[in-house]
Amino acid sequence: MAFNQELEAVTQAFSGHGVDEKSLVTLLGKWDPLERESFRKKTPHLFSEDHERHFQRWDDQYVRLLKHEFVRFKNAVVLWSMHPWERDARLVKEALKKGPNAYGVLIEVSCTRSSEELLGARKAYHSLFDHSIEEDVASHIHGIERKLLVALLSAYRYEGTKVKDDTAKSEAKILSNAIKNAHKKPINEDDEVIRILATRSKLHLQAVYKHYKEISGKNLDEVLNTTDAPYILVTFEVLYFYYKFIIII
Image 1 (cartoon, rainbow, N blue to C red):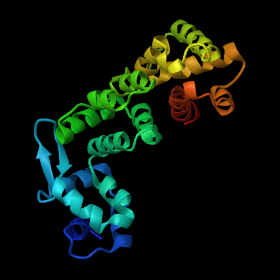
Image 2 (image 1 turned 120 degrees about the vertical axis):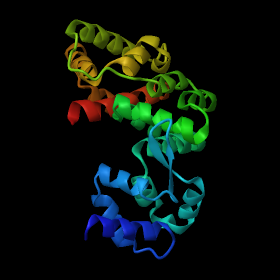
Image 3 (image 1 turned 180 degrees about the horizontal axis):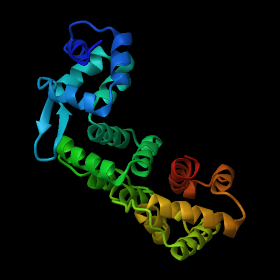
Image 4 (image 1 turned 45 degrees about the vertical axis):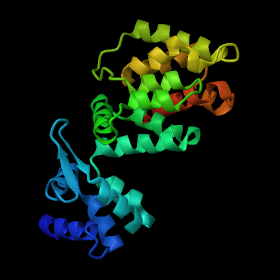
């Protein structure tokens, strides 16, 4: 099927003129980012252009309608078709509404997106909700994890290839000591640990984890799998995402 035909089929489905769920998911699933962007730009009755921030956002009224029409597979259709910035912004907003059990979404967004992607999500959040992600996180979260989550979601990391090994080794010692002494001082409130996790590049953190193993004699994942202390849980979830997406992949 030619792209113009696919575009017409998807537009028709989103316009409420009959939904072939299997075909719709198949089409959206195989479109690349440029094709999804073309769909957003060619359907002004569904998306509006935010000219100031340079992305296309769903019309809120249609989002409400689609939530009813596509209840069984909203996440597979509505979220997939969104601009990635808007998708992340809405995921963050929903996580804040749901509370602590959903804070893993905030951690995943902040730890796995590139600096430009996270900046884009913050721009989209401004456009959609007339607030910043940082101020909403700070006002909705009142536990000891607030400082860390605000720092992570505010980050704009260096993404180059240069790593200062001596600095990484020094910071591995800081991390090791913080984990050992977490029963005395919650790691979520350790300013140095927060600084390392929220500002260092992912390659730098990879070097930190390498030195951590040399210092402690354990891989970070071994530590993560053996601790269940509530006062370090959120920070360890952050460390887990970094370990998974930086060390393993």
